[in-house]
Length: 299
Image 1 (spheres, one colour):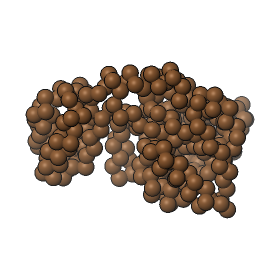
Image 2 (spheres, one colour):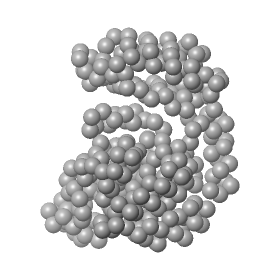
Image 3 (tube, one colour):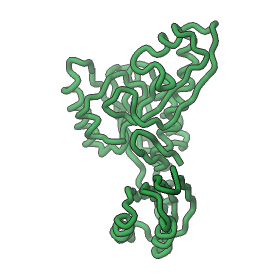
Image 4 (spheres, one colour):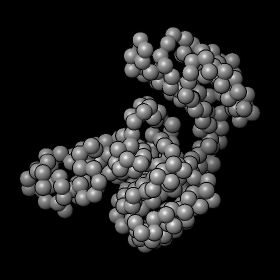
């Protein structure tokens, strides 16, 4: 990591040393917001941002994200988690309390096409993607110069379906060594095994070059062109064992017409892909996403 990025991260951590985020999902019922607010007040926390959503006030699911400022948060964290556990039991909550000063460590996986990787690196360099990009893993050498030029470790690990398990063993070792919080598939054109996915639940974000659920799998632009579509798009989603069917985080589209050949579709699509993936990654690292069943609530 270069010194400029390191300084940015250290400044961010200092400015947010007392900032926390609480994400909750539970069956909807009266008293949830009151209980959470009273809990935060008891620790002298001030709510900075609050967003909530209910699927149905009568018998539905309730979701809330709260960002708060709490003096001495690091020292209070263990006690806060212990006390909130009791509240969570009362309301049957799934919950997560995170600390903003903990900058998430990300690993980027990429193959030959670099547009999504370059977008992430640009956002990172500009300070708009507040993450620690700890390493980049690729089954090709194309990204090496760009990545190493930014003092990010680059690992070339050739991969194909015949050696997939051996490759993933090396990759999982690296993720453990670097203590990775998030894996970003920036056009990494390999299918992950159930073992790899299970080791990183809700921690793998993919970009698919299609507006899912249309054109799942390989060669979506070729199939879209053959179908004569008038809109193409991209979808960023969490990875599950069902190919391209994980919870969708973000999507976008661009209009095309009969004059656009496959290469032009791909060129237009790349612009959509890189922005969609960058937004999805930002929302994840800002703890704005709650996964419920196979859907996401994005605050």
